Length: 388
Image (cartoon, rainbow, N blue to C red; front, side, top):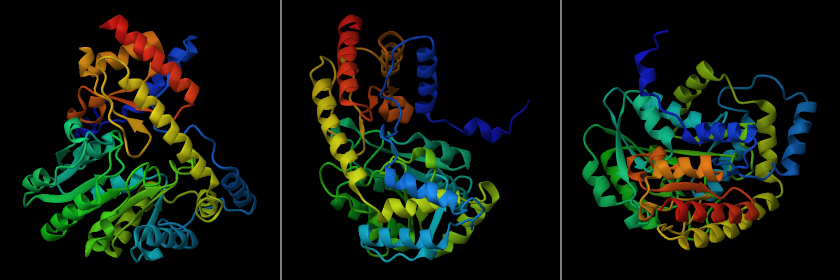
């Protein structure tokens, strides 16, 4: 079979590949601690599950409008207006099966062959994959451990050319756990506004903030008309399998994005959308408990990693990942990750899975129990002692 040439430009998400490998090892009887997958290890809160069940019983099992059910779009608009301090109407909201389609549809709608897209590196690997797939040119915004994985605005400014069409921001960041400080966000907003650059602001980890404040670039003057906010329910409400995300965007983008949805996924499951109303309007005890637990786990894993010779782990301010440098061990990140899984039973991801500037680092997700994290730390220390 001869595949289309564009398939050579399509990357993957390594977390799912490592998960599959870890599952195979488990099937062979090996005990694996999963620190590779970016998924809360909590069940969806009961009030949301009950709302989903009731929606099914009430007959919400049919096609809906491609951009989403009007009442759900309206509630999302209200939520985004309140949390970002901007004026949003339901006509600006497109609901999709998970948040990834917003990335893909945005690039399909905006990026022509040869257009340049600024994106965080290390960063979520689907950014670069989609840029390449649609024929764009990925321009990495380097996030360096020496700068606490922050954005260097001056360097970003030097990377902008007449071909720059889109800038992708992700704060809190996957895999680094870093945030873009408000003063940097403001500087980036000025750059984007003055140069006419659209911004895709991935805010999926907005509620997972342990220090500092979240500031959306959309809240700065003129940026509502140049920003696509990406958000969803998978992380905050432990709803990864429900597949529901959304984009908030300028009105002129809604129709083309909705048309892309019609041509690909048709619509988002109606009962899932109804359940999301309960997520937004019902008790927030579930998300608050999850955040408090993640903060405890973060402190444990950072302290534990920094106690191991050769590993340096910055303290993440958000999300549920740590991204330590393991260069002091003398091992490459790929060898470190492979040996840790195959010989010591801890699944993690090599830093280059998130871009070339992640080389020398490892991503651990602390979306696992405190007890498992402590055992994982013992295994990591054992490996480092035996392999270096």
